Amino acid sequence: MQNQILHFLKKSEGYISGEEISRQLKISRAGIWKNIEELRKEGYDIEAVPHRGYRLASAPDKLFPHEIQFNLKAKILGKEVIHYDSIGSTMDVAFELAMKGSLEGTVVCAENQTKGRGRLGRDWVSPKGKGIYLSIILRPRLTPNEAAQLTLLSAVAVSEAIKKVCGVAASIKWPNDLLINNKKVAGILMESSAQMDNVRFVVLGLGLNVNTALNHLPPNSTSLKQVTGKQISRVHLIQEILQHLEKWYDILKAKGFPPVLVRWKELSSTLGRRVRIVDPSGAIEGEAIGLDAQGGLMIRNESGIAVKRMTGDVVLI
Image (tube, rainbow, N blue to C red; front, side, top):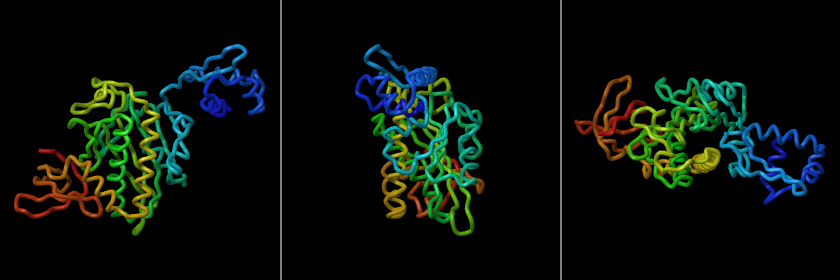
């Protein structure tokens, strides 16, 4: 009922009478008042003026499902949104939901993570109410070797969403980091369940420093607020991320990986640079010269031989 009342308030250009809400929702005036009081407790500023009705003055910057879904243009991503005030990891919850059959496009988000994680088992700092911490369930028709394409696709989508909302360029450091002024602002994590020849599902995780203060961030990190000097709407940014991600996901399904790869190269801060990469097989140094069809990084080593790496830590030299 609260979501329906919010919908009326948001659609109204000014005040809407309690009588009109009561008639449309078939609820008593006392019931409307009770629900509005509950909404106020959640942080909604709702004005009430005798003989005029109610008006939504402002909404809290919380990642409530009805906030994310209101006027969301994505058709699949975000159709189901599960929100937590605090949770261990959105990745863990989303993976469990995917195992139980949750639909493609389901989003799990949280105001705070107590066990947020990045690649290689690292922690992801998740101050409450300051960043975007979410995981998305996808069920692509890809082989296990092709699944890494979704990490690169996601980086493209998030970079474009940041540019649209904040007006700043975020470059991509292979395979999953977004940088602004050479400082990390976001990381993307992918976990999957696969059979021999096909992927059952993929869970894409995003940690994005939005309004986080620098003293709450690791070294060599930044936030969108620090870069722009402005408070950024997390809800608006999530909507843009989901819309851009769905756009590129549709392109991948219709045209394959090449268009994604072209755009990734345009946004890359890795290609053409001298890099050092460390993975379980050891360290290699050389020039990053390209990506292969699975999203692996090609490096020309000191002997002039092109070597492929699918995972590892990259240092830009």
